[in-house]
Image (cartoon, rainbow, N blue to C red; front, side):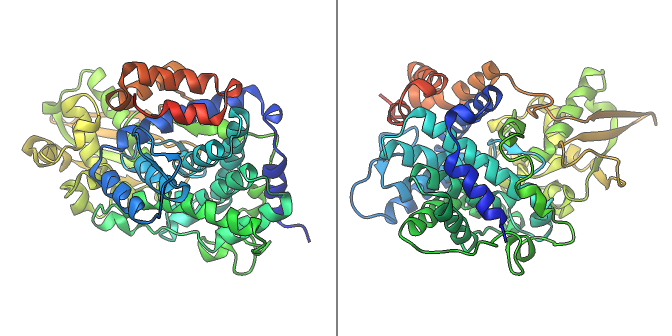
Length: 459
């Protein structure tokens, strides 16, 4: 019997840079640049600082892997933990909408650390990054949202498989051992969504832990340890243990593999908050553009998919008065109110003082939601937004956005991603340093991985 893990392993082990279409290379470069900037900006966050302290404590001796945006180098296992946490801490990292996976925050730390350590070319780094994304996205697609329904964080559950495939490729594992690495990764897949109860930092751990676990899985497989070939579809496999088998689509694990490039379907975030809320934020902006004023608004009803509601609408009391900045990033009423009052969503939106603003909290209390009827929304193909504002005079004004900004169907250009990167990275690297990273990513097929890693170190 041929198993899905072996199909994915054969793809990852044999993928060459020349096999990747130009559009997929461009998409991979755009996502790689984006995640580097997001992580460098995230390094300032107190959670990332504590994560780095913890990563240091996990290692013994000197290391060579760069902690992005610093002069510090750690051993690869510690570095990928620290970089994975920093990449996810601001909730500004990219997402494959259909798969509901923040893949780059898990895969990029692994490929940067291993490719630089092993003297790999920039082409090999990009090929490993693409291979990782193709695997991670397909695991998420196969679950069809049911990991989240079971209370698991799809990013860490699916992300470890993508990062393991990337690690195995950079370590030179053949298809058989790569398949065993994927099987071993299945015993390390983890991450529960209970962080929503108090906005705790455990969610950011998921990316660092999955990145670290990927290197462990590939290293153990290289040494001869084995994993179940049926890790995905088996009786006790991932799709049953972590998902809902009646919803799962196992065939998605290798559907279009090598011809349909999921890396081209990644959405890059324009706002540092839960991706589910972005289109609603833009709908609020459309209300303002239409000439509706905050004073005119009596109430707002957001139309959300049933899978979105637990993340951004529930429990209602917690969303109406977010206790922490991280809870605010997952509060649809808070985010819609902030966009209406301030005209933007940015890092400052989540400052502790901002969470206590009477005007913002009062407006958030006027933002409610209802669950969309079946077929009423395009979720999860896109993360759409739709809201209906009831004005003080009784009139209703509806705004909708079926394709969220940053989605492949409504994309940010490379230049816009460069602007986002520069805004995130300049404080740590300086303008010249940020420009150096941009140039290195643009020229990655012509340089080696160590050169890109060196560009991430401030002068």
